[in-house]
Image (cartoon, rainbow, N blue to C red; front, side):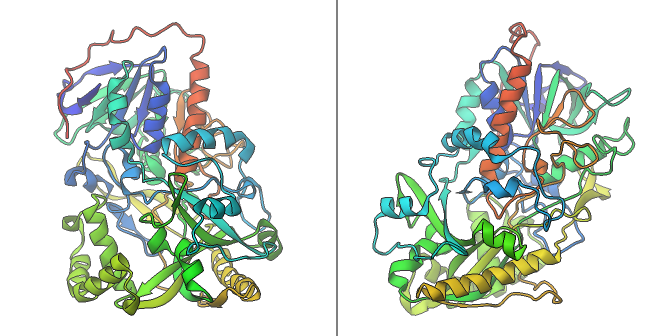
Length: 553
């Protein structure tokens, strides 16, 4: 059942067993797992079934660190959450991503990859991926194309890496009908949680306060609560829920909102393939993202990385490098304009919500955009200008990279958010050494030439540095409450009935692709919570009177 929260009578208290806050990939994965179980579930989603300007504006906030995308553009506040603006890249974290590494400050998970492997495999079905296989040689054989061959790297320093691309799965669209049919799950749209209430000693959540943009208010009480609202909204809600806990929920050690991470990406340097007709397509981001290379019913992309042994020896973070085809009209401003237009076309952003400066840039760049778009879409040889390198590296979890409450209030009366994205010197060295080593290995394999162009240790980050819209780390997982906000089961330290799902619990995040790990962790959390209810009597489904279901949009 899906209900418009505006139809809940003001002052109502809805009672359930499990309350999930947020209907993105984590929240919907949980709801599906809880379907037809012997307990009742309420799923609260702030947005509607489609993008809504008023709802999207609730994301507006302030960036005070490194250059970052406007916060109301970097996420999608409607049913399906961040899957609505996701490119689809999927690959599990590497085994060493979970390890404590003495050259990566604050690294190490309280769980290891083998514990997540069954859930990674289950996540493949939800994400509409192919066989659970990431061996480059296997995929090259399955692809079987002479124009999609991998460079024969020795493998002791640099290596080929394969990722699979989801269609991408838009969780709200793909699983809406299934959620609608679940007889023990009730979804409320337009339902914004504005406070988590923890009276007394703060060890239990007693209820959550819900508001609608139309002015409605009601409460939800549950035995178990799961917060699945992403790496920025999760700390915002925890910090803003300070009526009973003055420092915010889970913030007894001043950790909520800290260690904010996003994958820094820098398009710099070039790669010239010795035989582009054979090798360039499988590595070209502009070709693989739309589905130019497929096998076993799934889109495939290849890129370059450094082996774990090389990372240890060089004392650098995890990394990946794409080749990106360049065309006439290629410059950062034109690419920004193309990106904004593409987001608007696919419903992941709105041109009307862009700043005047963004609009002015798009208008100014229209001639370049037209030529660039023709090159990207049609791959016209006479417009081609070789290949750039796009390097994405693992961010260092830094306590001063953080999300805090800012100035002003949104349409619900919630404090606006303030994001301070910071990076360390390790990221600069990782980008530079990745390009240098990759160039040496590709040249040694007679595969081509790499031109290195990355900032040095004492140089500022260039204006072309960007993030990947991967908001992570702000409620990190750790066994010790002095080191993290949640424990290994994603339960908030010091609390009995509040769990957190999603990328905010990541202690570190490898070189990219958080969605498959988000879903795997959500499936693991679902199993844990189902275990807590295993000996309970079946819930009296429907004993709480609910409003009539009405069409929502």
